[in-house]
Image 1 (cartoon, rainbow over the protein chains, first blue to last red):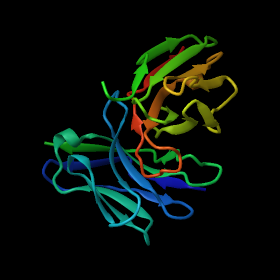
Image 2: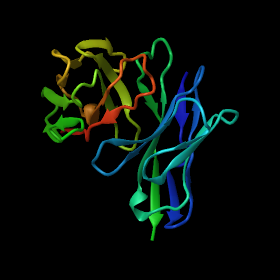
Image 3: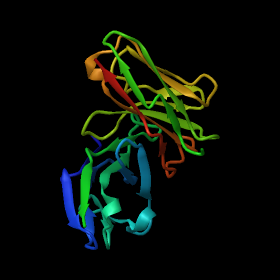
Length: 117
Length: 117
């Protein structure tokens, strides 16, 4: 079965420090991976995606993600965290199974990022 | 605005009542998805439309849940005889692409928070 795991419920980081939010996946075939961010009482905002090509993907608001096929990981990173980055982050994989079809997303449970001044 | 619009933002209903949730996708977006997000969880797929055709409803939890998109634009998710376990945030997402173009991200609305008393 295809799945996404976000092993950390919460990540705490000081403003200005680098941040990493972890994601591992399990899919059949090539993965199509996404990161979304959710602010309180808002919907999900697209940050970045990996489809093919370079393993380091750059996205919105200074975020990037590193795809590692051997470790089946797609960790979200930012060199210097801002207090305004505090939010809920979701990793997702496109369901590529025949039964899944039509590109629905399978989400992880989310990781709450808290950036402290 | 140019984003996905959902209404109402908040809905409180008594157990047993019927509710209807509306989604206005981004103009021209062919694909429309509904997700259910329980408290503290990632979104879970409910159903998918390509234009007016409902091509996947495998995620609908029971026959009390019904979705339609009669003219290929606005969609309505209806829940009949609501139960307390239906309490969740219901998210709508739209995408420009047909199902086969897997690289297009889904754009989410802010959701409808449904509370069943």
